[in-house]
Image 1 (spheres, rainbow, N blue to C red):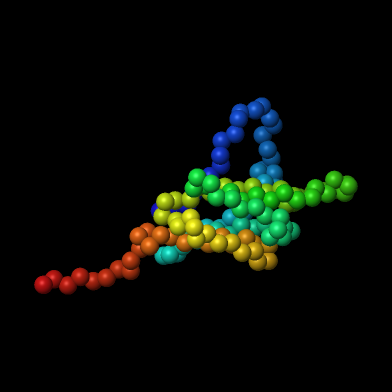
Image 2 (cartoon, one colour):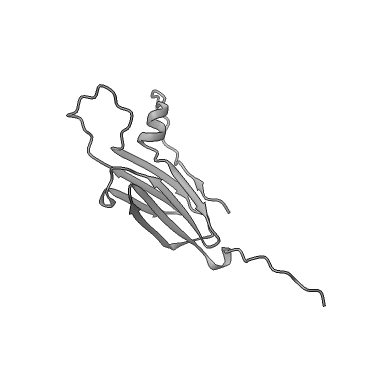
Amino acid sequence: MTLLSFAPSHPIKYRKRPSRRNLFFRNNPLTNIVETNDSFIIQLAIPGKTKEEINIDLEDAILHISAKGNEDSAESYTRREFDYSEISKSFKIPDSVNQAEISAKMENGILFLTLLKKEDAKTLPPKSITIK
């Protein structure tokens, strides 16, 4: 069972296509997903945010992570290559995840989400069967 990234559909509006910088760094944090025998671990790079600024919501098997921050509008940049003022990312949670057992911790700008699998979804270690 895989954990897939999910982007909910939005009403179609004419707008300029977002640049690669905005698409991948501004609104969409870089993500690692690790699957172990008993859990999925999602790691999101969210530098410059505190745990109080991050919202994590779960509704209809969709996990949504978002954060809004202060825009430095008073600053006049000569060059700006990163902006973490607002982020948003959503994941469709598979049926194998125990939705009541999702936990989160923030460490050094990385958000760690641990999604424990249901007991029946855990894979058993291989074993040898003897013939009688």
